[in-house]
Image (cartoon, rainbow, N blue to C red; front, side, top):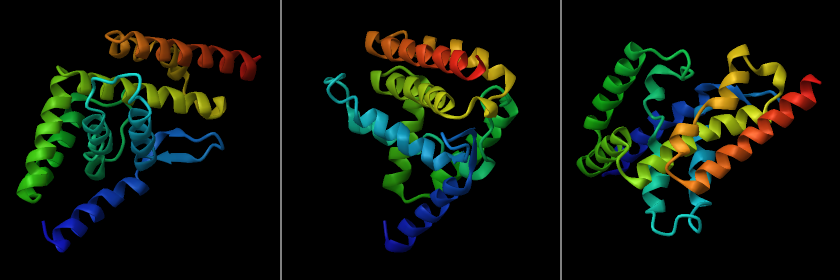
Amino acid sequence: MNAKEYLSILHTAERLKDTPRHCTTAKGRVESVAEHSWRLALMAFLLREEFPDLDTDRVIRMCLIHDLGECFTGDIPVFRKTDADRETEDSLLEKWVRSLPAGVSAEMAALYREMDALETPEARVYKALDKMEALIQHNESPLSTWSENEYSLNKTYAFDAAAFSPWLTALRQEILQDTLRKIDTEKG
């Protein structure tokens, strides 16, 4: 890949810095998709000792690229995203990935296929962490920023994604305890 191609990829990815997510930070500022992806990659990095047989570097790569489609469509919360929204995002992302230099294009396409199939331990860990990062962020944000359905989502979402791993199940349970404490403290 030459320098111009490299910069072009970075310029496209930069859009995620200005793409707002549904979540807010602890101080109530709207979070960007790039911030979510950064912390998700950090979450994967921190699991090296918990999952010694996992290709953690591959999980981190998944975390870094997982929301690149939102460069083209913006972020749509999971509870509002339709099949048509997913198809549009997937189509635009696929078109962009195909336009990249061959090596990068092939690696990204392979990672996206693996992530979609959710058959490898790496893909399942990435997906569980992605869902739980949003829950953690909600627990860190002011309760006044929550929509009504998030009270239920923070109590129920992502248990299925974590079920394959006792460690991730314990993490999801701890997130639930944080949610219950938050609701009790801030509503009470």
